[in-house]
Each structure stands twice: as C-alpha cells, then as structure tokens.
Length: 211
Image (cartoon, rainbow, N blue to C red):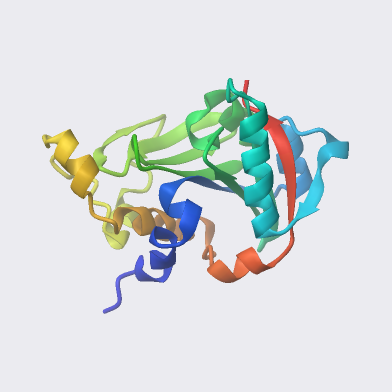
C-alpha cells in the first residue's frame, strides 16, 4: 500500500520549502481576511507569482535587520486559505500571530527549519490545541494534545515514540519523511492536499508585522 505521505515528497526536494518555510491552512477566511489578521495593510496587499513571493520575501528581510516583519503569500482553495512564508516570521512559532489568525476559526501550521526544529501546530478559537516537534511527536502540548493521535499513526508520525534520543544525531540524520508526513496529517484534518500545481496560480501577498 502506498504511504499516505508520498504525495507530499516534493516538499522535501522543492527549493525553499525544504530549507526554511512555514505553510499554514486557515479555515473559512479569505486570503485578504487572513493577511489583515496578520497585520497586513489592506492597500499593501498585492498579486504575486510564486517567484515574486520569494523575491519580495528577500527584499523584506534585507530591509529589516531585526526580523520583525515578513512577507506572506496567500491563496484560497476548498474553503481554506493557504499561507506560505519563507526564511522568516513563522506563524507556527509566533503565538500572538497564531492567536489572532485562529480567532473563531481553525489553523493548521507546519514549520520547517533545518537549523533548529520542525513543528506541527493546530490552533482553534485563539487557543493552542495541539503542538509537537516532528522529531518527538510523543511530546505533545496544548489544550488537547491527543486530539489527532489516530491520524498521526495513519500517516506514520508515532505519537508514542520514545523521545530519549541523541538530539544532535537526530537533527543531522532525521528521517526526511517526517516533513511530508506533517502535510499528510494536515490533509487528514483539512480534507485537501497541498499540491505543487497550486504554486502555478497567482497569489495575494503582503508584508506582515510579527511583533
């Protein structure tokens, strides 16, 4: 049987997603609504291709040495808005941003950072419900840390994993499948896949303030 995460294998090989990225899924908000919740000015929201998203991200980083701003791309599909960030200002690890974004709705966010750790986050109604490091899915936190344990098993993220491990060795030799598995879990929750074809559509993009 084909592993559920295999359709997301492209994320481990496709440029900035594999390096430092954050992809978030927000239910029932339009791209404009999601971006403004993150602090974007309405008149600063603009159309962008995927290539322009990367270029504008780098310009934003170069102009802010304190890393208090970031650039976010947004697209809408099947009742969810997908938010894409590269290299800075990750929604998944910024509690104030996540709280604002998830008010009266739900957010699934996956953070990738080769030099630190990768996180899976689920928030709803302004509350952190489930949070875990992809290298240690047994050590979950949040108001309901066990909500998705059955789904986690289905996609190969062992919720009962023994995390008494050599962290230095794990960071260097971690299973590259953990990152795609996080997106397989996101699909279980949201009901739709994040596909490479989506990157061919025009996005909306804006500068956001993380602090």
